[in-house]
Image (cartoon, rainbow, N blue to C red; front, side, top):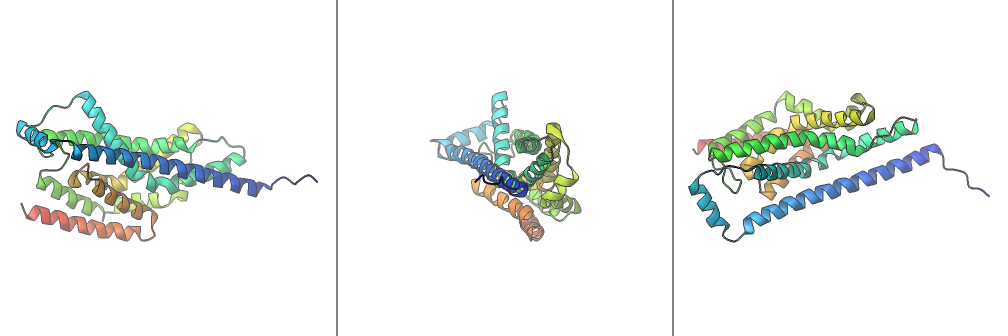
Amino acid sequence: MIAAPPDRPSLLAGLLLRDRITILTALIGVSVLAWTYMWLLARQMTDAPGMDAMVGMAMSAGPQPWSALHFATMLAMWWVMMVGMMLPSAAPTLLTFAAVNRRRRTRGRPFVSTAVFAAGYLAVWGAFSLLATLAQWGLEQARMMSPMMEMTNPIVGGSLLVAAGLFQLTPLKNACLDKCRSPLAFVLNHWRDGRAGAFAMGLGNGTFCLGCCWLLMALMFVGGIMNILWMAALTVVVFIEKLFPFGHWIGRAGGLAMIGFGAALLARI
């Protein structure tokens, strides 16, 4: 007896499950690689023999000019950091895009790889990484950041904390966060066909994500750019804000804590 072919809904469900597994595996793999790179880089800096002496000499000698290679290295470091910190919280949107895309394909519409959407999303954080690298260069040249990438000026550090905390309470923050917390609404309302359309959708989603998280990411300057624990703490805050039902309240509570901590730093000056 010849077995009956699987019905269309069952076939689609199987394809969607396969897509989810593939995308989640890729996201976990890329995130693990990014975190491993940052951990190894931080360990290399802290465990290098004679590092304290070299830092002291560098501080006394004053800021050194950056070469093009050093700038490119710092840019790559920031971008890898953003991949590790932001990509996990983008998983629901990427999975939603893949599901809608697969359903459209069953209706004869063109299929676009989810990687194209992800590339647009990460391009936005690449632009942020460029600005962060320029800010790091400026802070070092102004002697407000040490060669170990730690803030040495409490006024800048305290002001950043207060600014980030205040931003957590603004309508703009909430508006951008709502877009990030509603993957299906974003995908359906901003859908564009083709590879260029998928890349543009990724840019749009990345822009909303940047709009709600850029000041949180700027706090890496306060806790230390190579501080893995600080990096993990900010990642958890972003993840909870975007994915948990009580995320809004956690963000606001965190904002109040940032204001208080920043004000305490400024009061000690």
